Amino acid sequence: MATSKVKLGPLATVISVVANVVASIIGLWILLYLIDANPENHLVNFSHDASRWLATWSHDLFTFDREWARVVGGYGLAAVVYALVGNFAAARLRRY
Image (cartoon, rainbow, N blue to C red; front, side, top):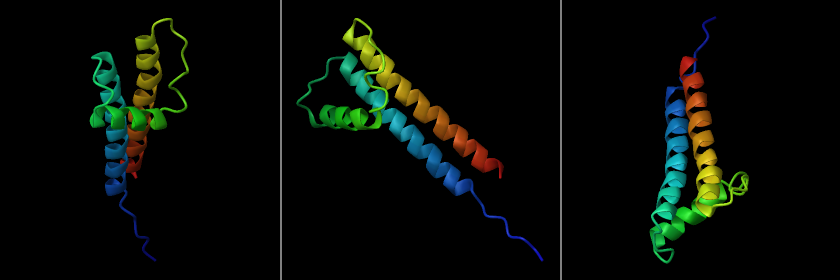
């Protein structure tokens, strides 16, 4: 009896793309914050809202004295974790 092997390459690609898009949205918010972008702009507002939701678990994790350091540390940690975990999971799926 032959066993059929399920191809997980397309799923791995989706996971990798989603992880990188999420990390990019958070990275965009960090950049827009650092260059003091207009908070009334729709892109700035969207990236802040999305990043705040995506980084709920880490955005107030650090208590640096400077606000910019808290933003970079908290949101940056979330972006790095999403990118690393997503791409690691995708790489593991591609091996099977």
